[in-house]
Length: 290
Ligand code: SF4
Ligand code: SF4
Image (cartoon, rainbow, N blue to C red; front, side, top):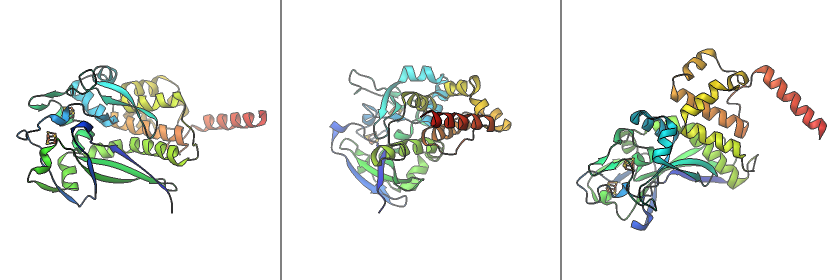
């Protein structure tokens, strides 16, 4: 049987010291009892010391809401971290307090000040989301799980919903769709690390930097695309190039395709014929020289 590599993307685990975490695996049609509302005794507890990894679409939404350049947003509200299973750099929301156990910078007594654009991890809570990949499959499969933390009284509320209903109510469809390529890259890298894929080895520091750029700084990635030889190297339609100048979501998708092509040699982007010829000739020279 093919071995599987399984990792959670949105853990929804906020404060491990607050109580035991009971993960329960769920399908979309499974139901669970939960309601979060300002009247609960634990209102805002989960927005302290929260472990929120920011996805690329989270950052697009938050920077647009706050009218900030990505670099300013990163400097003011995030801390760099490594997403362990893949060994790739990500940005997390920086909680206040010396040990990061304080409130989220977007929290006020009444609740979340960026609620309409809150990150995917916050939307998913108290669900978690994960993906698994079997050794021989190209695609990944998703799963959901319910996390019951001791401090969260929302589980005692009398509201029953299915996973699919909760997912819809939390506006997660766009987040899942737009972040898909990014999750694929994380999962493939994690699977290579745990199961020893074709590359097997760690990626270079430069590749990690490019992953971080695409994941966190759409303005910087746009400059990279338009101000370097990027467009001279890849075969991209003129119409698409025009769209990339102002469409952040399209640019993100290009970024994910580019990462897959560079990191895993997937044919998600085509090199221009002259660049391809040059690279074949260089590879032949290298082989002859060795
Ligand atoms: S972004 Fe909003 S919901 Fe998420 S941790 Fe911060 S205050 Fe809470
Ligand atoms: S019910 Fe749970 S999700 Fe809602 S505020 Fe309390 S701890 Fe947070």
